[in-house]
Length: 115
Image (spheres, rainbow, N blue to C red):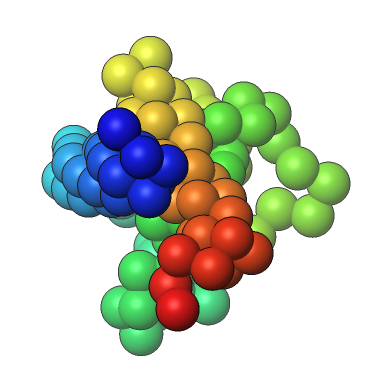
């Protein structure tokens, strides 16, 4: 198998894993955590009230990090308190898939696969 074929197969694997993990993370984790945040009296953060979905990346970062940041933008205490192990796994899997796609993209640009 030539190198370009290996590159394309890895690209498809990372893309599919990112799409599946992103879908599961938003449907299972984000929906549940948003409900818990509302139950505890806090609403959607002011920086994500337009519905752009920025909280997906923020929630994933909080769950992967596993502790409260120095300058919290989201309701990190509530998110960490209500997070399940599957939530942390999905966040980690989504982040790893995204990083893999980015690294493969940079590698492909450097090696000239997109010419």
